[in-house]
Image (tube, rainbow, N blue to C red):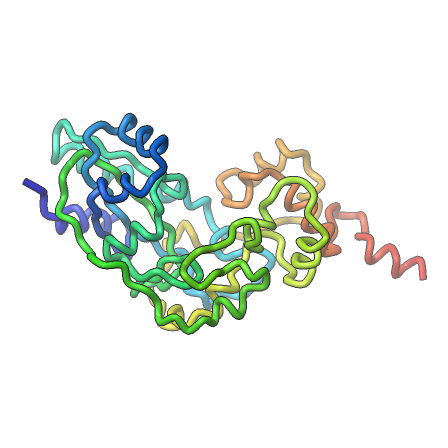
Length: 296
């Protein structure tokens, strides 16, 4: 007999979630590539349910900047893992012999679609989950378990479909059905290692961003009423970068900004992006634009 979700949902909300739900795992496994589905079943034999939770990180009313809003606070992977650790402990105590595995951003499941099917919100044309409390400014976390839990939600629901995100996406990376062309998305481009194509360089210069992109969220009318307060750990932390930081070695940069979401690729992509934008990479060294001005 499946367990009711309500007590489990209360635990997830006590951890800071603004929306929570549950989905039977088998229909999701059927959508995965056979090799990936086999790996999931191997990792957690008898997988029954996927507990889904959304955590607010912004309101959309923060000032714009060179960094996407999601990257301005503590690394959300660590925040969500820390917040859900007591939930895992409580669930393990309440259901002896059952296991609960944590995922955030790296689960084998289609996370946004799964969360929408679990009733946490609607699928946006920008490929993001739109919740009632926080709009699309949420991070998603999951606990997969061999405990049978009553599913929540139902049929997949979609946003109003106004198309504003499609019109505002600077890279034309949105198809309109919730699919994001990851190879074109500006956020992905800013985080890519190695040299960028001429087209990608022009895109970066035109949009003036060092890391990430919020444009499809900023323009979304579904976010206008977002009222959930962001988790304190995810509020912007200053400074984002200090003069000379981009001249640091990769090891020194990672050490200085440990625990921040923009560190996982190291300093090289940020250094490249800053150079393309004409920003200083060393405290006392003028950028190329400034050098040319002085030469005139």
